[in-house]
Length: 490
Image (cartoon, rainbow, N blue to C red):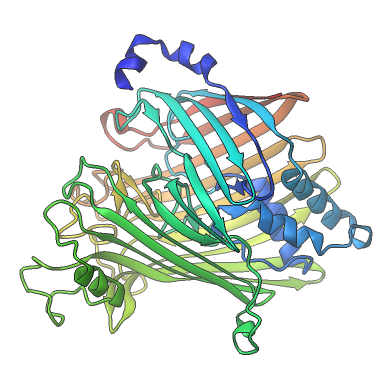
């Protein structure tokens, strides 16, 4: 594949890359990055119009369609009606032909939920097929000067079989676990997706049994992926599971757990996997040798929540996430954390929201703080990363971020996403810790994405990043720049 890319100029491949997507309710999902869809879903949820978990992404279009079917459109107020119409346009989408091109002068320094590109120049192509029992997506990306040397990628390719209310499948799937808009401390789409198998619940209907029914609507997803070969422990596995539920309409709780396990030279027996699942993976535990020769793996786990309420007819929400980088007594310990506040604001010219979010990726951040430990491990020395990029928060470890942001769907069909961030990267300055900043860096960033239709079948997006101080080294440096994207829909 690399030799093929070398024979063709990037520009040629760019304009030959055509995306054919057969969208349907049963097959399609809404992926991380679609902030306007997430905003409208959250707005209907906070107003009590729908009641589905919304902190585990991707979300199936079937889930959205089922929620909308319970709504009487004629009874909606104008703000809810606007959200309803937008989401209906997603679930009713017809088969389309798309060409998506992106070119820019920067790589995003601290990616967020709204981020949709990873490289300066890239093109995407995909085709989706489905029937009543199975669905599949073939996706291919071509990128110029990639940091990981992979010019051609299959990110987004996946297939699944529908078994009742479950999808069982395999592929390269972008995920976002948690309520944050700037950060997910345990699993984000900052790093490229790794290939693997998965099982996930399609829709979130509550249990019918009286006692279990109290859990409310619930979602579950689990996956087993394989990380890259070019790391300290080649072909280590990345495992993950998440259970999210809404015991009351105003409160959503998520329980997440991930682990790095196995790989070349490490034990990969069922007994070792059992110890990992049971949390028996610390040196000195029963059966775990002091030299760590049979230590099962490196785990993260924790809880997140989002609580919404209204004051003077104005919706608000508080959310947070605590992720343990270690285990004690069967529970996560040595935590990293995030907390946020958000408020939707509806006016005559826009339908949007603002958020304020703070995160700290220092282990035991609420107490004395332990540097150079979060997202690190004595065995899996490449850390909790894929191709060198953090799998959790884009800031990597020992970093603090305060972000004010907004997402706005304008009444003229345009949309705007923006973020202003004050960040301290690698606050202890140890070059052995955070891979983004070999030294302590205090900086501020401003990011924006403005999209508008040129015609019925053409959309243009203009993006920018402005930084008070760049960070990184060599080809990995992050600095100010601008970019643009074109999407043709036929």
